[in-house]
Image (cartoon, rainbow over the protein chains, first blue to last red):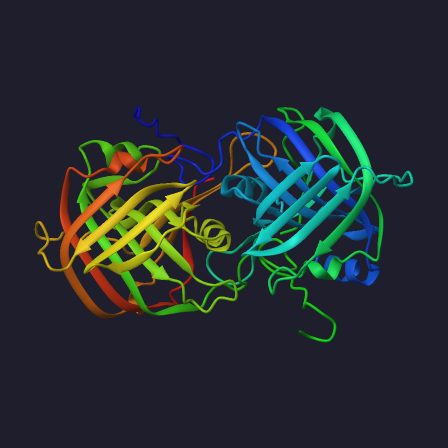
Amino acid sequence: MAEFVVQSANNMPVQAPLVPDPVVPYSGESITVYALCEVDEATIKKYLAPTPFTSASNQCLIYVNDFSKSKRLPYMDAGIILQIKYRDLKGGYYLFEYEDNDAAIETGRSLWGYPKKYADITLKREGNRVRGLAMRKGKPIIEVECDLSAPVPRFEKMQVFPHLNLQTSPKAEGPGIWKQRVIARDNSMDCRLISEEFGQVKVKLSGLPTDPLDAFTPTRIIGGGYTVVDFLAGEVNGWGKVVADLI
Amino acid sequence: MPENGFPVKNANNIPLQMPLYDDPFVPYQVADMPCLCIYCRAAPGVIEKYLEPTPFEFVSSDFVVSAADMMNTGHTTGGFYDVALVVTIQYKGRRYGYYLFEYEQDDYCVCAGRELWGYPKKMATGNLVKKGGKIIANLVRNGVEFLRLEMDPEKPPQDDLPNPVIHPHLNIQVMPNCDGPGIFSKRILLRDTSADFVRKSKTTGEGKITLKSTHNNPIGEFTPVKIYGASYEIGDYFATPANGWAKVLETLV
């Protein structure tokens, strides 16, 4: 193996950083199965209470995503996104997010405040059936199954861009928060839809003591689908923007 | 489970409502923590090269690789298996331990170490076990075993074991900008839990080490030119409210 060229990076270890520096641009085929759902409004309110955000709808997007073909930053991803308002902005707030690669988890958390945790995630299509599954600590937490041969009434998609994250970093020297910022990110204009199919979808959310996803078990499923997107986090739109420095 | 379901938190790390790691993270303790150390010397120039991007001064080519089983911390998220490659450095006239590489098996301990105190952790799985009369530790990342430590307590160390300065730990915590290339924050953090550690036993023996570089993980460059030997220690580890937190020694950026 050739001698390693030591870096002086913007994350640790500085010599051989966990996150590529700079991480942008990165790109790849992004495959997603999703369910657009309604959930209990009181539950949404309860989970938004510690944030400066207010609810913009009683809908949420539950998804499983395959970005494993990306050369620079491959990962599998799954999560639940709420639609929220902050000041004059309306966007998507990742309430739960899981990935299977430590570099991608750290990219999300340390750069942009995506609240990522680790999970083992699969997304498989067999004929017209698609199944996405996220497993954390050996237990299924998110299951999304879509039957693309079963028609669904047309539905209006939820606006998830810009992503609005509440990045929160702890103090080193004692309890409490060191820094807290609202960070917006929107690369949607650089992502090209390759294909989109709709179908009837089933969702199963299971809770763990540290991950109470079952609280978001849908009261109604509006619709679901399967998309293939040419994803780009580019130099212009791939970075985040600080909307507010709260702490 | 309370009547109204999961008690939503307002934590110091994300997701706020159900944080990745406990808030507060300190105190925690590990009773009867086993720790295997292999004492080594790197090839000339290697440690100097890895200190080049830091403000720290080179002290010697000696380094230690430790593997500690801290699975029983009492955290709600569980404990950790920690393996680290540590060198002694000098900074402004004082000697410290600097973690060059560190690995743990789970997301919460990796992120807690990075976000709280700047430990340069990556994820890797492994075990510290006694097998066939030997004490063995290993690490696997992305399906490849890239580190293996072994102590034979029936044989003496190859040489006198050095006494490297490991505490206080001095970390360079670096956080990236969100809105473009570059650094958002860079601080030197000092952490020293050693005053609260209670050693119960320590044995020494012959040491072996295998280090293999993998993608963006150049630990194989520390394949030693000399192995002094190994130690195996059992002790009670405490991260107490008094000494378990870090101190911000300097803010560079």
